[in-house]
Length: 309
Image 1: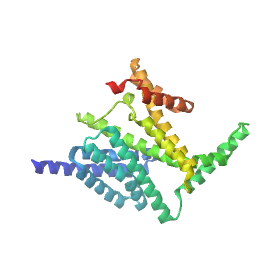
Image 2 (image 1 turned 180 degrees about the horizontal axis):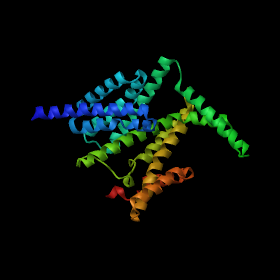
Image 3 (image 1 turned 45 degrees about the horizontal axis):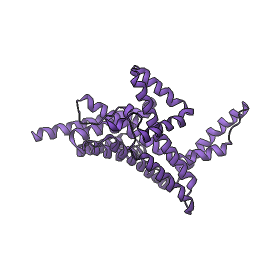
Image 4 (image 1 turned 135 degrees about the horizontal axis):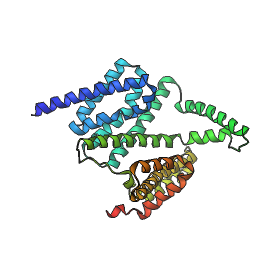
């Protein structure tokens, strides 16, 4: 029986490696699929859940070798370096039946570290700075937009001020991006496993999403420590504080959106309309601060009474 299970696991590992390789190569020739490359960890995480981390790692190594043979070396290195650690880490914790926020948190940290290492690797090998390249592209875009607004007699900040601010928040944006990637991979993996009647996988509804109960105290402590770095030489405290504020605004924004989704859901609004409304709210940037405040209030007083359920 054990031999049969091992053979079945090896067959699934080989099949997933082959299918994922075909998908990854197709994204090169079909640019419309390029954004979906971030979901490559999903099949390997499912394999880790069903048969264990070692089969997932074996399958990912096979996938890496196939990609290395069939595509350019740099593409393979970037793909494996950015997605590999997150895939292995999240697959391991999913197999151990950890809570969703633990799996997503581990995946976020692994993704951040991977991106940082890739940036350092490119800088060392290629002799170029990724941040400088981003600055050049951003400067061209900003100058174009500023010139267009000035022709319309609209008062705007100078291009240098906008560029400096954007470069300042690059670390925060990368962290938020890593969080979204980990979140998307986890939810898709959990949804697929639910289809296979895997009832022990944690798939919380977005309307019940809630940050840890000590998030307010934690955010206050982190902000205070960040502020105190102004007295330490060699640390650019303004950038640090700006990124900390950005991250916590984003986290409370997610909880605020969750509260709104919960309230809309209680009105028995059809799911399609509810998703449409949430999507529209996401696109209305002036509501960012207000929704973040709603999330902050819910973190303090538990508006939805989720803690008592």
